[in-house]
Length: 343
Ligand SMILES: Cc1cc2nc3c(=O)[nH]c(=O)nc-3n(C[C@H](O)[C@H](O)[C@H](O)COP(=O)(O)O)c2cc1C
Image 1 (cartoon, rainbow, N blue to C red):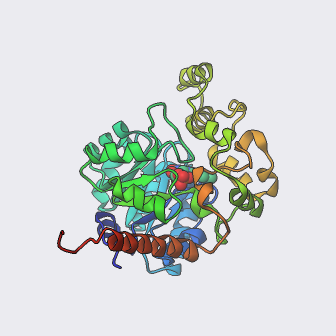
Image 2 (image 1 turned 90 degrees about the vertical axis):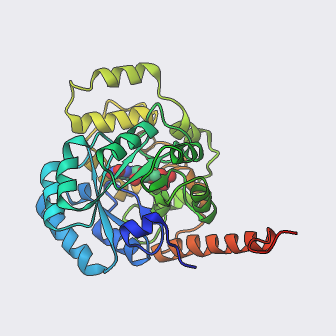
């Protein structure tokens, strides 16, 4: 089957699947494996730390694959953000993805460069604003996903179906997408493609502690701690306090503190910049650390753990997802006798 959607047309990838931005994890090697598997790999600029390293990493990624890839610039998390963006533009990165916070300051520069600009956000209001600013596509993360939360965030299914009625540019679904059925469901709800963070972490190429991957295999999405972490609203007093700190803390510390408040981590006052926190994921001890990494069995992952029953290669992960989706569609077409005259 040929997977042609508005997203594959825009990005030039084989399948309508994007790798999520992943602090400390989204290295050029990992992105290359995803691009080689036919999805849109994503180099997370924060992983490169410095503009010079980012330039080297983009070049290494380009040497490792002829397939398209994106660079994720997470606002508030990516160090040296202006210079990092300039490097992407100088290196003629085809797709620049901004994420998390208001991208307004960077939009003109990206649009003038001719790169495809994608913005990722957690609320429909924010992706609508990105569309109005000229985004070529938007990624909407539902509550089912891991990462930055917002008090106006909806569960993925509702978010995508509602956004479809309001957004004209290609819409990409994130949050709890981790297998063939969740991929198809997101697309039936109105997405032009899907975006995966947690699911891709349970792959051989993902540079995190093997223990976190094992925890992902063992974890179930109905664990009360995981439900609380992903779906419950933040504690009102913590939320009020972090919002009051907005202009009193360095932005690169405020953003990870806000993320922790939204994920209900009680140690939210004790934060390092996100790129430093993310480095810890390579250490086996991270798999046992309750406070900074959240739910049990521990690790920073979403409800996607429900669809992860073993650690496979990135290629197997993508192929299983796509081939499984094709089989489901063929089966449904047979059962429902699609393509046959009625009666
Ligand atoms: C460990 C981890 C680190 C992440 N780091 C980033 C990041 O640096 N920038 C970003 O935009 N999103 C980040 N995300 C969010 C993902 O890009 C994506 O939006 C999210 O994982 C989607 O939900 P899913 O986990 O259910 O697939 C991160 C997610 C995880 C699990």
